[in-house]
Image (cartoon, rainbow, N blue to C red; front, side):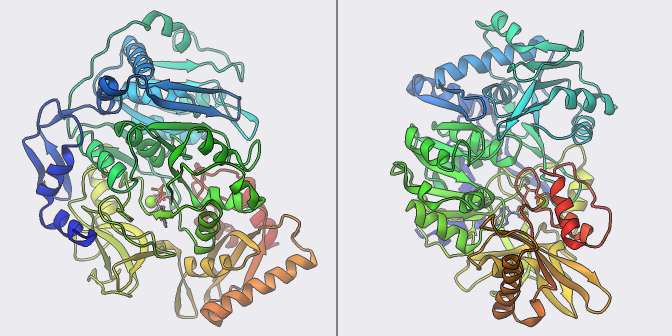
Length: 628
Ligand code: ATP
Ligand code: MG
């Protein structure tokens, strides 16, 4: 059966298709109904079935692989490196579950994790899953006010945190930010569990703060059984990256998520139990939830938890880890590859990466030059995958585990089974044919694993996601897309990233692709800026690959001119940016997404909006300086 037939079946016979996929996980109590779609757009999967994410990720593997590696921790920040077998992981998770219970955490309580990439963060996530508590991981190092708004929204009984994170060799103390975040929040947690890494001294708040290490000894031999949860109970709440505005609290179920991840591990990632999966994301993002923690472990793979950057101690570190742990599947982001692209390419071939079968990239549009650079450099296939915090697993990619398909440069691929993806007209809501640009939408019901609703706000779920497209109840991705004659999709940027130059509608993404085709550019962002004459003009910001090209120098001016001509040659004079400024860094979210709305606001002298997820606020200063 070809992929297309498999996909068609997943839409025509949803229940039959997902009933089969559901057999991949352990159900303590079988489900009575595959799908309850009696209250659109809310979908309830595997109704009545009882299961547990932690059981599927850990306990289930004990009979066959208690002594096999499960969690491999590598920190190039602190020099720590350690492996936990499934048996050892089980012990740590049960201990952490007992510690949480001792603080009064039970079924349905929220536990907010504000943690760096340390094993205790994984133990705590799995421990919550085990006892039916709802975790909400907030990216470590977020500023106090971002943290405060998430504490207020999730109302956690307990917060688990650490003294500090570390980034590029610099200690980032967390405790002060946490205390301030709690002070700013109207909701207060009863307890704060602190993991003391010995990186940054802190003051414990008497009666509230508890030291995890001290409790660990007391609970080392505890027994904590898995709480069997109905499939549609809540496993976690996770906030979106905040690229386009205020982050949304994505609420996820238990059974649907477990099934979707288990299926994706084989159908999409083609991982093999017993081998090693290396995802370079952070547990604060959805990619980290799905493919550092739950997906690989559910599938019986070892997973690498990496605290560090791709370039320290040198630009070979990722490939060194691939060699050392015989990584077979790797998952990273275009932004990480673009960082490497600024380094000596010989780093790609200094280690034995022959164990690596495929490199998956997601999170942002993957331009062809970057894909080719890394694919050729490593000698492995590179597979793009498009999805969102909301979906929990890929929407568009290739399901080579079902039936192999060729990669098309610039395209993340085809709709994954279960996703009824359509390109629709933004004004009429009508479905569009091949080669017509429109909004990428999904006809509900959304497949298992996707968000159930906005945390405690069903109204916002409908208003935000299902009301954007006129006349029809469709899930809007808020991304532009196009489908070619072979059914491959291409993402053309966010729906708010379209600019209108003298009556011509241009996707900023297309201009960015043209800029990136110039070998001198590592990354770039294009935004539309208000112009009294033309309505809007395109303005570009580009980071040269060669750091020696300093802004304002002759070389820089020459490069800027070349870049403008490159766009003009490829897209025509109307798309030619009014200016291309060279900068050394772009304002990005901590998840590596370019904050185009803030760049645009800076260009227009407006307030830059919600910056709670920005990586480096000074990057915006460079934009402002470039404009002067
Ligand atoms: P917010 O919704 O809060 O504004 P966000 O959309 O950046 O933030 P995420 O859910 O982390 O939050 O990101 C999903 C978005 O990332 C997608 O809607 C899309 O715009 C972009 N994206 C992810 N993967 C790809 C990809 N492979 N190709 C192109 N774009 C991608
Ligand atoms: Mg989004």
